[in-house]
Length: 513
Image (cartoon, rainbow, N blue to C red; front, side):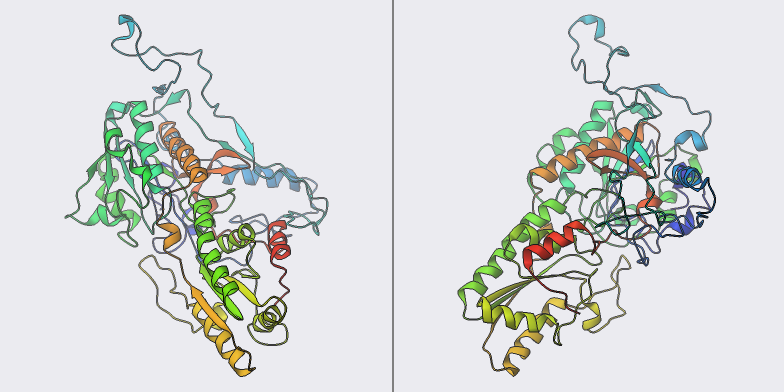
């Protein structure tokens, strides 16, 4: 994304931090020819060794090791953090860019006298704007010890270091004239509950700013290069009820042209246009760094309850019944963990972050035997990326560059049947794979609200002149992050976290190593 980073200028320093293939720019919402907003999806790069602070180095992409013998290391760390999390602005590239009074004001929506028939005056008394210097605290727990559950420490003493990120919302000054803006929205990658909610809110908020030229790019990035796919005109009338159904009004696809090709097709270089790129994180896996959650996740967990409950009924109703449910989660087990915790019907939860053995004295199969002998039935919930060392490896990749995973659910089903047959105990094993069902449904109320606010803040960020950013929720507040900082590697379940410990308490499962 070097041509779009830092508001369309080439940034050599940012380029190495971005993933390979098209993982940097998947699942976008893009405003074009005035500014672009993009729906930033599960931006996965190659997994790093850890998602936590290193004792000797700062978090994530910073490669400068910290010298803890330096008495000023804390202030230097904060300065480095501030530098990395400073969000690019249009004035970084166009110093002479002019700002205008915001056209977004909710105090007076309709003219009540003829004095305002030709437009609204600037209302400086309205206090609905966000100050550019507003910040949100990234970490809110002061861990007293590195041994505290879930502790994320910078130094061996777990020193408290304040880290502040930019607050999202409408600004009093904007850098684009709404009447000159052409806004384009594109949804890429796979489906996710809430896509239509985000599209709808972006269109509605754009119209409130005064934008008339709004289009949708069909079928993801394919729409930028396929001459047979025409832009879809969008308006409030078009999107009014699209949130009542799942999927994406615009369609989705994986793969497609490169970022440079997309920028060239938008003629940004040729015309030297001022373009803003703002992302909305879309992934039911909930694996984007630094964010409380991503939209679609709550709906996926809720929908997964149906599959788990079906597995429980099948297992509980059968003689020596065992239900196996496979849920999405390539590199992060949040859906499996939260679904197991929510259901209260799962006996074994297996996720990619925690290794396990199927066989052996401490293996999953031995524990299943114990459950059959003591309870008479059992339910296993497994994330799709778990136990990949136990299945046949493949070098195949999908259009987005993701490795095609082996089916761990089928493997567990087969090995379970074989194991119980060998030990002479009858077992009725049922396998349920609802993977695509949990992402094709309409967003629930929680995700609907999240999508609404994310979509609105994406527009606010673009009009404020910010680019190369993604909007997210952090400690219950909405913030803007630089895209490179949230895509360095997937967010993963911390096996030492309180949430994983709560899941283990709920299932009662032992270690399987």
